[in-house]
Length: 205
Length: 205
DNA sequence: AAATTAATATACTGAATAGTATGTTGTCAA
DNA sequence: TTGACAACATACTATTCAGTATATTAATTT
Image 1: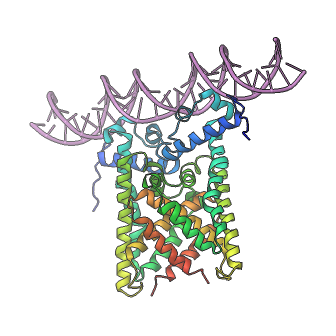
Image 2 (image 1 turned 90 degrees about the vertical axis):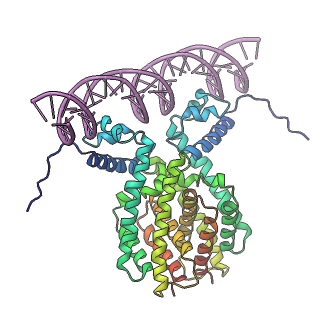
C-alpha cells in the first residue's frame, strides 16, 4: 500500500526547512554575523531568490531559526527524554552524560546553538533577544515541571524552590557548553559533572 | 614637587592603550565580527594609520585584547580581591555579589567580555582559541591557588579536588553571565546565587 | 489548454569593510 | 640645526554582503 509521492519539484515548506537546516549548521559554526546569505544558500540546492521568497531579511531568518529549529531541539534533547525517568534528577544527569559527555569533541567545540546566539545577538537586536529569552524560559519552564513532579514523588526536598533549581540547571548547561568550548580538555566534562552531582545531593531527599 | 609631564603629542604605548580600550568597549558591545576597524578608530582621536601602525591585522588586535586587557581584568576583578579573605569561598561569593549582583543591569546585558569572545571566536580562529584558553586556564589556576590556601586553613574539605572546584566555579561565572544576559530578569542573579551557596555547603568543612 | 500564480533563478546595486599606498608631521639623536 | 625615522593621516582599492529588480519555470486554477 504505497502512498504515491507526488514528484513535485517545488515545495515551499520543504525549501524553508532545507534553508533553515543549512542556516543552522552555518550559524552554529561561524556565528550569525559571520554567516552570509550566500553562505547559506550555497549549502542548499537553491539560490537567493528562494531565500528572499521565504525570509524578508536575514534577521527574520534568525528569528525563525530560534523559533522553528533551536527551541524544538531543546525540548527534544533535554526535556522529552526526562519522561522516561521516575527521578528527574537522574534523568538530567543521564542526558548530560549522553548528550555532552559522550558527544564528539569536534561537535562540542561549537558549543550550544542557543547559548551561542544568546551571547552574540542579545545585545545587538531586541527581537532576537526576545526570541532567545522565550526559548530559555521555555527550557526553564519545562524543566521545572519535571522537578515539581520529582518533588511530588519524593525525590526532591519539598522545601526547595523548583524554579531556582531549574534556572541553576539551565545555567549549568550553558556553563558546561561554554567552558568545554573554551578549554579543549577532554577531562573537563567529567570534572564539572562530578561537582554538579555534588550540588544535586543538596536538593535530593 | 611636580613631575614635569613631557608634552609629547605622540606616544606609541599610550596610543596602543587608547585603541585597545576603544576596541574593548566596541567589541564587548557588538562582538568581534560586528565591530569594524573604522568603528574602533572612530572612538579614538586617531585614524586608520595609527591602527595599522600598531596591529598588523584585525585578528592581531583581538589577540592583544585578550592578552593585554581581558586577562589582566579577570585577575583584577576575580582574583586579587580574594587576598583580603581568610576564607576564599566567602571571598568568591562576596565578589559575585559585588561585581554581578550589584552591577548596573545595562552593563550586565553585555555579558562577560571573556565569555563573549570564547563563544564567538573559538571555533573561528585557532590563535584566538589558544589565547582565550590561556585566559580561562589562568583564571582557573589562580582560583585554585586560593582554594588550596583555603583547604590548608581548614575552610575546605581536604578530600575535595580543588582543581574541580575551580573549574566548576569558573563555569558558574560564565553561566551566571550567560543566563543573566539571556533572561532579562532582575531576580535571576539572587536565584542562582542561592543555589551556588548551596553547592558551596557541600565542599565546606 | 490557457491563464494565473507561486516558487525559484539571475543579474545587479549601493554600502560597508579590511587592508594598502603614500603622504605628512612630530621627535630625537648627531 | 638638521637629517632620519617613527607616529600618525589621507585617500584609495578590492571584496564582500544584504537586499532588489526582474526574469523564468513549475504548479494550479479555470
